[in-house]
Amino acid sequence: MATWQAVLVFVCGILTSYALYYILNIPVQPCHTLRRRNLTLAIGVMSAPGNFERRAMIRSTWKPTTDKTVQAWFIIEAWSENVVASVQFSPIDPGIEIENCMFQPIPDVILYKSYEYIIEIENLSSSEKLSYFNVDTVLNNFDGAIYYHTNVRKYDTVLPTMWLEVKGISDIDDFKRAAELDDEWRKRNTDIRQQLESEADEYQDILFVDTVDVYRSLPIKLLSFHQWLFRNAHPSFILKTDDDCVINLNSILKDLSELKERNEDYLWWGQFRKQWLVQKFGKWAEFSYTADVYPEFACGSGNVVNTKVHEWIANNADQLHMYQGEDVSMGIWMAAISPVHIEDKRWQCSKNCSRESLSIPELQPLEIKERWRNLQLCDSLCNCEVR
Image 1 (cartoon, rainbow, N blue to C red):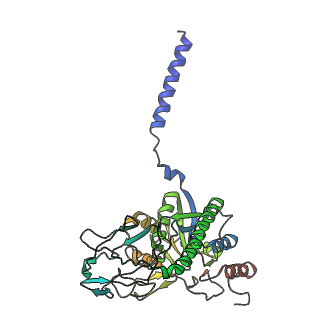
Image 2 (tube, rainbow, N blue to C red):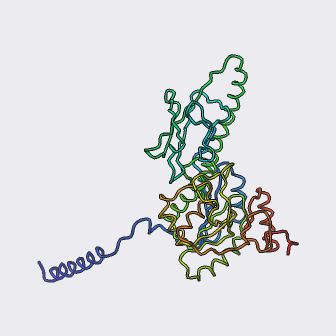
Image 3 (tube, rainbow, N blue to C red):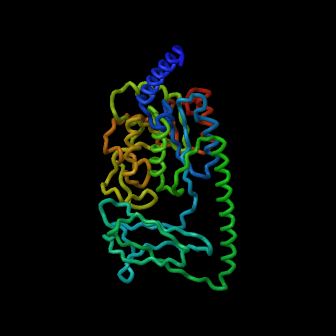
């Protein structure tokens, strides 16, 4: 081998050794870290599968489009099956005792042939066993047509019992009408699914959560949003709102620049409900939380947490209990870390409006459009004559 070739091999060997040393000593980052985007504000908008008009109106009004550091997503249930009926047992309302068994009556419902029905049994209390109510029933599974899910602890014994009534010939007309209505519902449900898939493909701003479209699944949606966001972005602040709200985004972003200078680890900005009574009946009935009043929680029109609060929620989501709504659940969860509450009445808890309002809830789509038009014309969500 010629001298110059030997020198070349020697030099290449040295360069290769240095290159390998450099490569092998570069710290390797997880893939999700490389994908995570830095955001000033991430917005989660609670929505339902069929609320197409509301989402369309938000996209055409306040939803951010130009500032890539501000992103918004609609959070929607992946399941849209209807709840046929539901009951709850509690120490206050343990049910009706019949032959040493406790029953909660429901209105008569028709269960159709060839359908699959799911019975969910859930122990919402971390301190009381369901066997406290002395319920001792059995499950009759009629040839696999009915399934049930449960997260009841192993030492609880609660199973549903059903009475089935076979209708006579005189009721055939009622069945025909019921079948007709059922076909209409099935077609509507299929149409919603197809339209929702097209919407998700077109706008790329929908996050699907694997849960049922009922009020009590809202805490699951909120936790799922924080978990997904934690894996895919690094936001300084996170705003939660609903699809019946209009948001004054420019004013919010101006105030966030000031909040960023604050030195507290945990920040929560909104208008807070204080000493809110725990209800035991109706839509907002709560049987898991045993105190008489909730910890203070932000009303649903909009509230903001900083990244430390967001990361705590995402990291602890699997251990956080689901209470009757996402707002009261958030208040109970936050009691564990005691964030600094920044009380601000500009986050409206009702349709009332002041010139400085940051959000207004409970609006129909055309009302959102009107409020947004006011903001463009006179820098206020209220009517221009409001001072």
